Length: 191
Image (tube, rainbow, N blue to C red; front, side):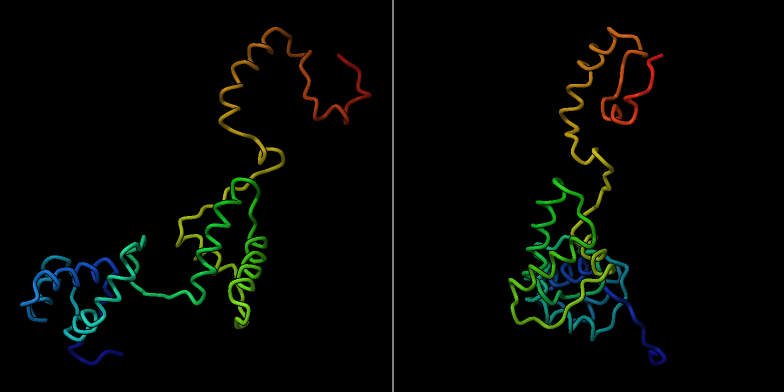
């Protein structure tokens, strides 16, 4: 529990980067001036110790968040196996269009990739929670496909559908059959 008179505010990664850039551009500013600048411009109240710690880590912050997509995150979590994570992202994006990628399939692939990249790794469990965090971190969404709809090329369907309608308009509705179910109804009398 904080002592009386202290406060706790967590800066986002975006504010950390902006703070380090501001200090780099204005090296003459004191840490007290930086606190006031943060409060006025970013509505963030932090202690002088937080400013000091952040500025000491400025080289790491610039290196880490140069290409970072989620700068609004407040925690700086590191992934234990970064090569595995990037390989899994590539695998997921390559396979999500061709097949239904279930959580179980992802977990199995994680273990194969992990064994391949880190042969002497510690025991690792890729839980459902880790899977969800991984997907949200990389903006991955899963769309569930049912039956044959997973194999349909939607662009080709949009182009072909008017031609199918033209052909079907030549026949009465009672004469149009779905051939997928013909095996179920082959003995049924035609009405």
